[in-house]
Length: 324
Image 1 (cartoon, rainbow, N blue to C red):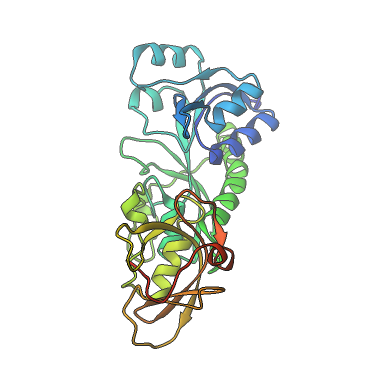
Image 2 (cartoon, helix red, strand yellow; image 1 turned 90 degrees about the vertical axis):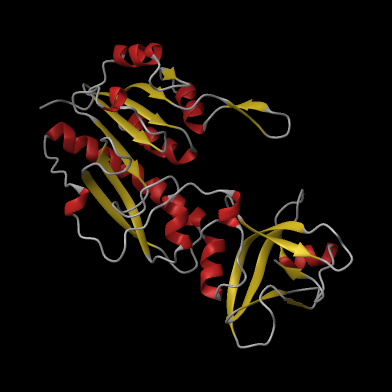
């Protein structure tokens, strides 16, 4: 039987979510012969070049690194082939061309942050919370042509509490992901993998997708019920954050306000959705179709995130204002 130190692994990933898995492989004594991550990007006001979290880890641990602009580029494909990988592992990276995913003898598998076939796409954690799901999880699966459709190797389920935001679930799945990936590698080494085609897996309810999230996706619709808005906010908190426009009497330009934390108040009323009910000191309630949303934490443009009472001490919001 092959030893884990003899299996040549190439790892592909970019954000913080992918670092934990790479760390588990390196510290677990697996033979990571190379790392592939996104090209460096300028970030922030000074457009300073910023390394991805995976690149930062690779540099700190002297791991060979490639940062291709194009994954079909001949120079990159040749450099990848030179690493002679037996297996490739992908965590939060990009869609791979067949010339890349089909290269190693044991293929390429991906760690996806959902219970596939649910939530195929770029933002599975956000959408599971935004949709008010009570369960999510992680899946390892072999890559094939269509994105997120390959045969499932292993899955781990994770409950979503009503108070969890996307940051909490992200961190739980990230920590579990490292363990699941090493278990999957062990199963491949031991020849015990029994992968299942996704079309043969039982699915409860409709199949939901997890498309990329844009600014418009994050806007709060105050005409929805309280539970839908509450889930929308926590499914985008802390990042990229739900937002709304604050309209103030006598002020022409509305302010784009980010909302991070809310509570539901189920109560009948006669206010228009988006109307603000506040004492201008301690609380900020927003009328919705079946009650109010109590905003607990928010952020004005160019300012830092504050608790509502902190913000109201320095910024006047009255009952004449409204959110749209």
